[in-house]
Image 1 (cartoon, protein in one colour):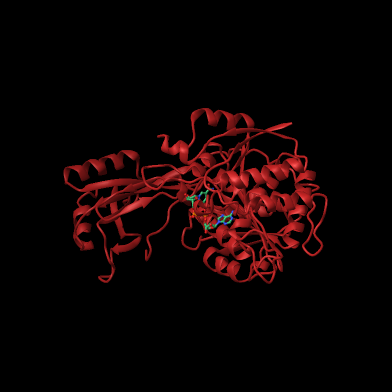
Image 2 (image 1 turned 60 degrees about the vertical axis):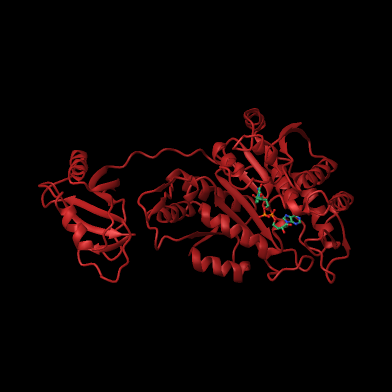
Length: 478
Ligand code: NAD
């Protein structure tokens, strides 16, 4: 018996969890359930993370967590339990399959079977944000090589295990050459290890448009956190309904499984909600713990039920559905179909479906790192770039001098355009003078000079090269 942690959540959560557990138990899942409380009640009892400390112990002990949606109270500094859980437990991979069930569930895309594999811990979701000046706030986009390698390898291993033919990478590396550039570079490196799987890269904007228009050309998609968050909902919705999609959050030690939708409070307690999204999450969980036969049996019974036209209100259509049912009746119909297979929809086979066993990330030897300059960020209320340049040039020394000023990334000095709109946030780039190099002492002197001259420096960024390759972007227009 494998012990798993279960949280019934809020809104429609308890109803869809009861239905899901009833189905998986009837199918013969060898699991024992340990229930914890998370969500609204815990938040409102004054715990801003929505989960008690003892519950973390249960989740970490059992390692596998099936979670119904929860309601995050508005305002009041409440932290998203989902984001916290993913990061605390190192659940780096978010797997979201989106399949259309034509002609039984209405969809504009009858042939669609995409698995979105979204990086789950990094990117703008690190939540490192600062206000720097009156006019400018920033959010740090952090992308790491281990993060990229783990998620890209996961995508290829997933494709291999489930017999998928192609992995597509979505990034915006034409603009974000360092962050998205690293993700794309790692994708190209790792793709070479899987010659039997086709690989391609799309710039995210046109890739997303293509996915919304012609999803049948995609198979597995791997992408960064924010893009994956947005696009996996789009994929689920255009496949038929967000109510049908489940999601797996996988880490090296622990894993969490859920529906992709929320707690739909307006539908709660009325035996209306569709339990399919959570059931899809539970099927991924059963595969993960090696109960592949039970997972396969449930998925085929579920497909047969959808095919029989037994539908909850959200997917019920007069012309394609046969019987409108509630949550409980839908679960009973799936149970009655256990052991049966769909005839029009493709029956699944999970013979090789269990948890992926990925090698642990190996640290690479450190590169040769050389300091090439420094960006000094200055809060200044004026608008004339030549005026600030004159002020900042007063900080030039024998070793370093001002080489460029940008405002929101656009070069405004030397030779800026008077049309460029400037905020109060100026990046002043210092480089070594001819024949010199720059040291950290020069940076300290620069900062101390700025202090003496009443220049409001809000931060610095060091400019490095790694093994001779510059590790920073140029100013736009430089
Ligand atoms: P929602 O997903 O709860 O609902 C969106 C729409 O889809 C509603 O019309 C709802 O009735 C319908 N719907 C969703 N799931 C359904 C189901 N299983 N069966 C039938 N209809 C279904 O999104 P929302 O209204 O934006 O959010 C409600 C609450 O859920 C918020 O507090 C939000 O923070 C939370 N939320 C939680 C999670 C999670 O726990 N993973 C995810 C998203 C939203």
